[in-house]
Image 1 (spheres, rainbow, N blue to C red):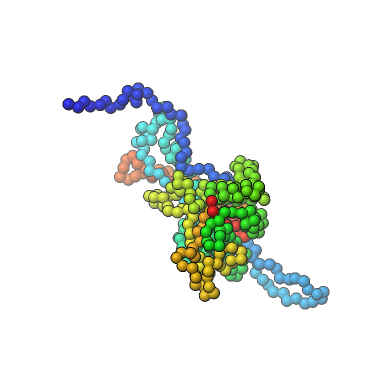
Image 2 (cartoon, rainbow, N blue to C red):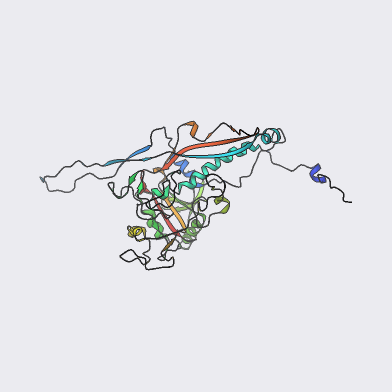
Length: 405
């Protein structure tokens, strides 16, 4: 005859677990230098309402030049000012709360960690995390060079730092930005040509100082921030160490260490897209319904190079890969493929706009609980945030890719 074991062994029955009061270790979301730098820069400018976020910009020069004294000139009225617009985008985080758990069980002096407070803090951390991931992507609908539909997302760097011809790190080409068509009436005034740092066969290559300096010098103005993945950072540091150009410094704006490069600091950021993102980070980017990690949300891949993408080859440095004059690739078997590797973004941070809604109801607003109609103890808690993220001056920023770790 078998004897039933007691419900609790002696130690669990007599001794409580040690639990540090009020502290939960964060094993999911992270703080990043990218977010800190933008907050410190003053890029934050609330959106007070209107049909869209509109900004005017000068895109053409005035007529005139050297003439002989007394020479007549033809005077024409030429438009020099236009405007771009962006729509606010909407983000949310939500949790399902069991009120019995938080009000009956997780309460009183025995509740050393308040579950609901931890959940609400996690929602705030998570929405910033999602927004930064989208800062490196785009917010356009699929079509005409754009392979994926991201119309619900903010208008990030991959579409901003583009020239309408050369593919961005995500393989997309963006003929428009802020509603304006690039290379048309406004010319190249809103262009920034992505730069390839890989080899002539379309594969990533170790970085070198001269190539990085050229990419840093390409924008109009002086970038102050360089952001890359942990793989890109180690590759750049190793390359500079060999050339005795490696120097780190603490950026006093954000108290974060990075590689000094001219007037900029290159930071390692774990949300920057990578060929091999850290899985504990990548797995937090979920599909809109929250059911599964979004595949490749912060992972670089590869894309097929076409002849049309080589229009600005002298600036982009993309390899020819054997295209003939009739745009037929001579190479087969996938050899006309660009493997992205690690990107590096050079940004003049002061020229970016982070535009959250001025409405308290859509600026990190925690809604009142929504009761579950068929259940007396369940309710849903939503966090809402409306914003957009863009730059009026794309030519002041640069995206590069093709770094091998």
